[in-house]
Image (cartoon, rainbow, N blue to C red; front, side):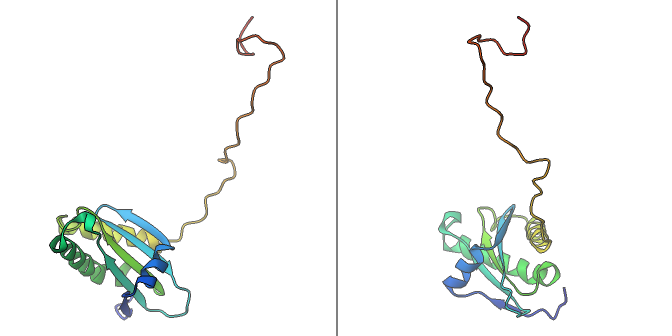
Length: 146
């Protein structure tokens, strides 16, 4: 991507809920949700959240600051224009080594940027096993010698 990509922020709850209906990738200390807006706007919108499960206010704020910086560095390189991204802090986000956190964010963004085809169910489709029927009441399998 280019450095000229316009980056906005997600600030309202309905925007976060809409992004939650898109696709998501969990990698190490971060979960990233992506929604392709398909509205013709080339800007990227970013949102950040951390639940109380990961810690108190200090820990949550530190985790979100680290995610904001990682997103600032990596979204112009690996993000897709016209998409909303929500970065969700996980348990180790505040304490994770910086290089590992950058790797987590980068791998999640690149996985979201590459469209995945629908799984081909051709030969791998699993059909239910046929229920064996026996004419006799013999408890041995039919293929055993009698």
